[in-house]
Length: 88
Image (cartoon, rainbow, N blue to C red; front, side, top):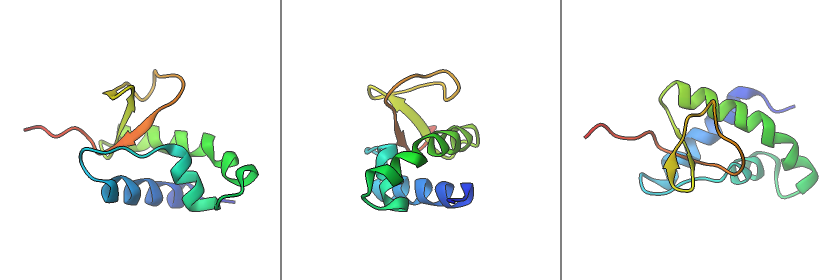
């Protein structure tokens, strides 16, 4: 069983590696943890969403839909993960 801490670490590492102007698909995070077996990585999609919301609440990532930052507690469908917005 994948622990939430492993999911958080993986999300943060992938978002940081991707950089400020890029995003990460949650399925990429799932594959990084579980490998390419679809039956395995798909099981991680809900736990990844939970951790993504927690990270967004903590100000460590932003959740985006269609290129825009959305409320992590009120979005549906496909989303991507990005660094938090900067306050320049």
